[in-house]
Image (cartoon, rainbow, N blue to C red):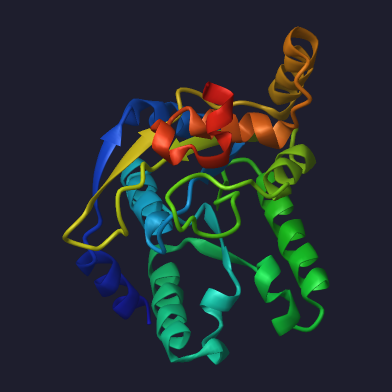
Length: 246
């Protein structure tokens, strides 16, 4: 299976243009004493793959410290032939390249699985444990599902929860991919725009307090994190967070 996965990973060319790649290197340099939550906008099945390819390049081939939130349904071969094929590919590639999927049951799929809430709790606990260990990276699309319009959707509070429960170790870091069309290997090129810096839970708490004091805005930590992500995107891709830039 590893050989098949490696062949698939090498064969699938995901073309990218990186902006501010040194910013990502700076973020990765914190892994000596920290862990990272890298969060990104989600519009295509392949945008996690684009980010994984980039991380592999910047980490000199390493992905065994990377944990990726993914939909349980997309990894479940019992959900149909297409998903059986997709899960086989992801499983073989993850085994060959070393990254670890964290399978979460999406809200729209909760009725398809027994004890779905308990299962999701265990997956979140695993992610928090991962983030409380220095050197690890967790990738998450905080919108919870793909955007059909290319604009940011309201984020799930999971993003804030992960950072809060690992606040002594983890830093958050946004990466944006402006949406033009679906990502098609060989034919499309995806821009990766890296945030200028990482930030901690305490820094975000202070920003929330400052916004409340200066502007009277009652924002959450999740809001502040998503505004930072939106700031990396063109206005047409900011979706429900565009109002903060008017």
